[in-house]
Each structure stands twice: as C-alpha cells, then as structure tokens.
Length: 277
Ligand code: ATR
Image 1 (tube, rainbow, N blue to C red):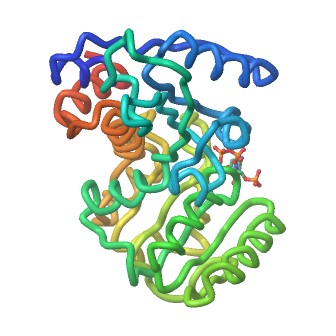
Image 2 (image 1 turned 180 degrees about the vertical axis):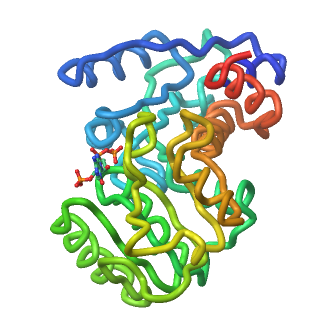
C-alpha cells in the first residue's frame, strides 16, 4: 500500500518491514533516525512503548498515548524543524523523532466514508473491550456518540471501560450489556470472525442484528465475516475493517510526504495484498 502510494506520487522511496524485539525498540528508532530514514510505522506491541521513546509528540499521539507513525526531522538554516524529506541531505544535522497516531481518525473516517454513517449523535453497540475495543470506545466518545453500549466476554473489562469513558466524556451515556431498543451502529472490535469456526461476536438471542442500521467489523480477513453476512442478510449497511488499515496508512503517508495520499492506488494495492490478485 505504501510503496504503491510512493510510486503514484513519483517518489523514489521504499517502505520496508523489520521485526524488532520490544527490548530493542529504542535502539531501532534511534538507529533509523541516524540512518536518515524519513519515517516509521509501528504496530503491536510497540505503539504504547514508542510513546515514551520519541523526542517530540504530536497532539494525536499525546491524546491517545500511543504512537503508530514516526517522522524524522532536522533543523533547516533558520533553526526550524523540518521533515528530512524537505531538507538537502548534506544539510541534515541532529535528527529528532516526532510521534503521531493515525489509528483513531481512521476508524471515524471509515465509518463516514465506507458506511456513510455520521458517528456524532449516533447510538452504538460496541463488541469487545480489549486493546482495539478500548481505543474504539474512546474515539467514539470523543467524536460525540450519544449512547454507547459495551459488551465483552469478560464483563469486568467492559465495566472498567464504562467508568473510564464516564470520567472523560460525561456527555456520553455509557452502558454495559445489550441495548433494549434499536441502534444506529454495531462495531465489532473483538477478534471473533478471523477464524471460520468462530462464533458470532454478538449473541443473537440477546440482540437481533436487524435492530442495527449499520455494522462495522474491524476484522477484514475474510472479507465477509459471519457477522457481516448476517448484517447483509438483515439489510444493514455493512463494511469490514480494511478501510481502517487504508486510512491510517494514507494519513501516515501524508505526514511523511506532505502530499495528499493517492488513495485509489493505495486501496488497490492493499486489496491485492490482502485478498489476492
Ligand atoms: P485487540 O488488541 O485486537 O483488541 P485483545 O486486547 O486481546 O486484542 O482483545 C481481544 C478481544 O476479543 C477482547 O474483547 C476479547 O474478549 P475478552 O476481553 O473477554 O478476552 C475478545 N475475544 C477474543 N476471543 C473471544 C471469544 N472466543 N469469545 C468472545 N470474545 C472473545
């Protein structure tokens, strides 16, 4: 996806994958800067660790206390920090790392663009209170959903999350358990659906999917999870999690390049990679 994006912009850049042990993360970030990498993406389990390791945090990282994108910067002749890509190589002195988080906005963009759903004011049933579920709950609360119903296999985690949201976002009505009435949106943030043998992440005896207008499944492989199959059969609008992956990557590319992401080229490459040619 990133290499296709760079190619579409005519940039002679390369995006490469490296396995880094968490114990070596600090050295890896410092090393990448010293070698004048333009930036990095980080994934689990590095996102929270990296938050304390970057030299400077963008607001997006500070808000979520997690970093999934790093841009390396150095000072220009006037003493202003600039992305390395904007500086002549010979002028690059001391390099600093700046941490960003592009995950949170990606969910909201996916809901708006892939589902046609405006989360502000919506009532939402969120399935899952693990790492992805917690971030989703906080992002949805921040964007101003009206009601948030939290369901998780381990109920204590949903209750802890409810308290966290109530403390930070008092305007949002947060509940644990299934709603009595209809909802605008169901979000699956559990890992159920990745395996063909997985049960549905929602108990149909307790909540009928037909009571939802739209269903967003963060799982994107397989393209149609059992939950999405049920959603389509019940005439709900439905989308899988590929958009979240695309939009977080597109925003990262914009942070590194300063240019608008070539979304169609990135989406096509991502689909080829994930679903095969
Ligand atoms: P992630 O970072 O992807 O969210 P996680 O923190 O391990 O990963 O969370 C996985 C989520 O899927 C959790 O909500 C988990 O429920 P528990 O908190 O009860 O563990 C949920 N999950 C995983 N397997 C499940 C299963 N077999 N049945 C119900 N929920 C499941």
